[in-house]
Image (tube, rainbow, N blue to C red; front, side, top):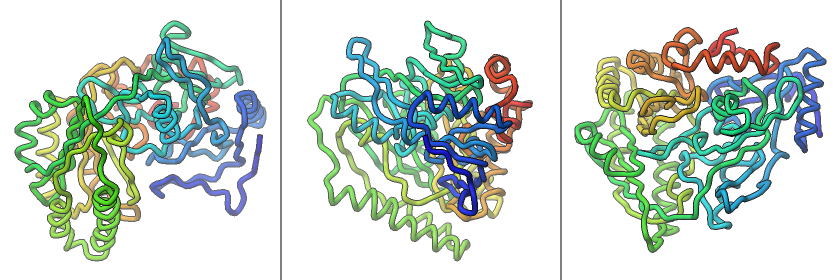
Length: 439
């Protein structure tokens, strides 16, 4: 186990660049036993403890001035059970590595988000999700967890073993302990056909229920200051596989979606008045395409342009009204928004603090490019989301507190009571958790 004190260059920054922290020391354990010892030592030294993956959260959920646990040595697959169709993986394993390893074994997760740089523990602990009519978030695919609790003991949980912990720890916010391994449900590798095409914003809203019902996975991006969207429909396919060609893929995913888009963001920052014109051009840059490939190559995409993001889950039935209100707000406010708004869905699940806990949900995500003032836009958007009982993504910018969250999460008290039992002295506390969960 390596342990280093933070000095002049010991400042930790998240991926979006909007959160920094200066931990007293950083620890990189090579085993669960070493991690447990680091937790016990921190408690003896009177230091708080947080674990951090790749820093893709836009909140300070992983920030600490105490001990920062880095899990990059806790990686790899512990085992595959083909009878139960599960895979057990070390918590620090990047989703990209897991996806590649599963594909080699002829296996796949059922659903996933669109970024796969995060660690499995960071992604699940904050509620990372993709889009799906019946298939839910990554955390909803968890069948078992192992975590180190505040006294340094190792606790395992599943539907049968410590079920009350399992109900909450799948999206535990780092408040219940440090996750060291996760067991996911998997299935035989399958093919998805992706159909991507532009569609007018008003048509998407008018046909949203139909588009959702007819597709296993439906999502779209709306370009503010325009009446245009880019839609994506993913459905299982019998094949054959027809991946995006290397050259067309580079043009669409790298040159247009990242390269040209990055230039457009630079121009927009330098000349905000040009943003509506840039948005109209950007909305027309991507053409329709259809391709068939294995799941992670369809669900995920590269994200080279760094940004800051706010995302809320609202009741699925309310999403079209939310989007109409957001469009009206942008049009009347004088705001200049250069980043598309992303819209996805998820079915209700049974995870205590999942953003889809107990209700079918739709996600609306607003973004601003890194380094651009985002407060006015996010404040206006958040006002709309909260008026519809929105639940903020735990890893994305929000200003909500425990009083608000207790109103929109029916099982909020169940989570905080479990936290009182597992971490009574708040070893895993930080400013973010104090705000969203209470003292």
